[in-house]
Length: 488
Image (cartoon, rainbow, N blue to C red):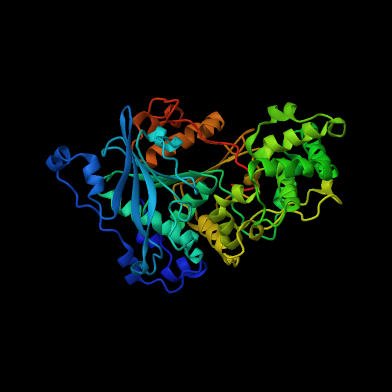
């Protein structure tokens, strides 16, 4: 591991601002998994990797799916509901394992949401030609305790989930490990590094927002004032405004769609609040998932457009099902975290002055009222300070046209071998392959070196650094689906 004890902050500092007071070394020890005993070379050859994985206490198989050149397992791993008090109950957390070879490095991936149960490679996994462990974030069904104590959903508990999984699998996969993820997954990889800085050999965080001060969101206003071209911004703003001008006829269409699809609006409050939330997401969602070249699909003259054309554009980009109870249910854990630790954006949108009734609604509006929430303003400030002072072998990649990059992670004087790179013209799907050539080469070189697999030529010359795995259209497919709702 690249980390040294000298780099660690005192435990009280590590956990003091994150609501983790009272965590003791004894509790940490109790929460550690009993890792499988290391096998000798002869034993490893004789024992199937599946049997070795299932020998880990708390690990169980859901299914194995065949894929050429790999073994792919969907697993359950028993985790403490509360890592500070592991004796107070457990839950089953889904993980997947794309097994290449125990002699290869391993990439620990998380989306920050549900886990994809189909074989996929994150970009760093392709670059290092390694194994990949993917974790479903706690409290996303079915990885949710029953009954659910929502106070146990926080970034430290989730980082501790990762730490236990890593500890359990490290004996089987002894080579270097990298953590990665995009969007909320990039945030998750960063928080994991903050709380367990000795686990990973490198971090690759894609499009990870960093909302340090939740009440100060002017960076987003500056972003939307200059993103793309004026022509495109004007088109989007006009359609969004027109959707609010025509609220009455379009809400009638919304009510009909809700009746047809069985949508209800108890969580957000009523159909009117849901309608405005969808419309207010429109401009943000366009830049998050579309490209500048897609502006041609936006009605050029909103005032002359029909109600159906306005409806279709809003629905295609924001999605009218998003703020129904049915659309919100899956993402309750995200909105809970946004309203307790992560923060959420609020932008002014001056072109909508006099047309909105609610403005950008807070996360509290999207979480059932029987779930208590209280915001912890020090949580993200702690993460931000730690990254600026301690980042070591961390890479942050952002898209130039992605709204979530308006408040990025920044590096300070205390960081080492760490980088922030911006992919020109890219949206929320920005990655290393979309960087400018020089930065792409450097990023690839650093990832290879952190994983301990950089060929000599690449180690000496970043320009010769290329991914080690052969391209695979299925495994390397980016599952960047257009997600409804304003969330990373």
